[in-house]
Amino acid sequence: MDRQALWWLCLVAGLGACASAKPTLYDEPAIQAVQMWTVGFAYESAPAEEPAFTEAGAEALAMSDLRRARDGKLRDEIAVSLKDHYKIDASQALRQGAGQILLQPVSGIYGFASVSVDILLPTGKTAGSLKVKNGDNRATSKNDRDFAEYTANAIAAAMRGEK
Picture 1: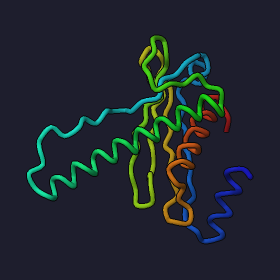
Picture 2 (picture 1 turned 60 degrees about the vertical axis):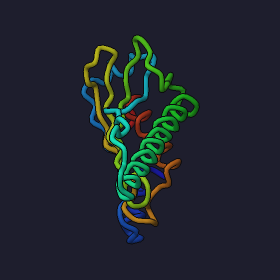
Picture 3 (picture 1 turned 30 degrees about the vertical axis):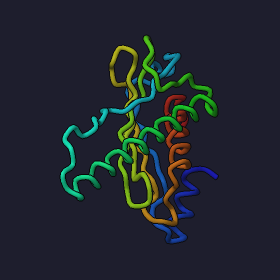
């Protein structure tokens, strides 16, 4: 089933918005010329340096650690999926001469709400971006693993110029 048919099915069924991906590519031929990619974050969140002196502070630090771990798992699953399912040479390790796929995940009530993806050439030039959104309610929201696969599929399709 193609994306448009799935979207209409969700709309007609009254389930709310399904997951969606919107790519914007600035230099498709340059993206397709890159042989290897590094999957990382648009920014690395540093662990809190200050000790938590209150119960609320300790809970906030624990939630922050959980989010970093969950974001890392999303990154790892996207990188593995790109490599294994889509045969794109992707790794979480920085490599000389590799382009970068930079993620900025946003958590939501039912899992990840969205992830913004920047595609950078080895020169550092931004060659494209994607906004991948998850479903907006329990019935249409993908779990973390399915959302990682959906995001990897969207990235691979954009990098290959597939619509």
